[in-house]
Image (cartoon, rainbow, N blue to C red; front, side):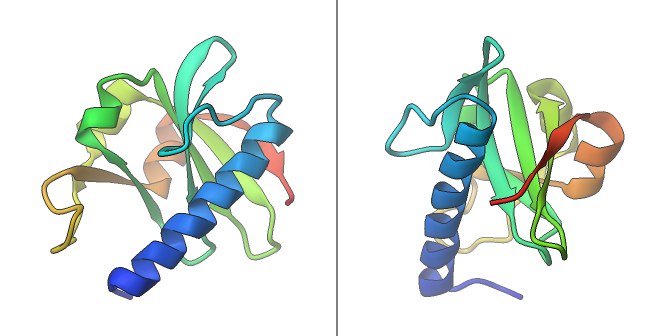
Length: 128
């Protein structure tokens, strides 16, 4: 399903709210009002959330420059989220450009859930 401006804004709001709850469950908090960045176990990470039918997460190229890891939070059919931590070097190697024709065009790289599962570190599951 492709996004338009309205559905993209709704997804962004959901992702920000969900990431804040997940951060609390991980014992940290989101430190920024404009992104889902936080310090987790002494590393600078971003928490990126994907609903049950979404198989990838995206990060801006600019943000990747200041991160150590990307935490992918992938919602399961049960509603819980499986969490994987992926080093930025691996995210960078596997990312592809977003199909966006809007504001994200040329600014965001996306990586599939399977890369997180196969090459990332499983850090647990949470229910929100």
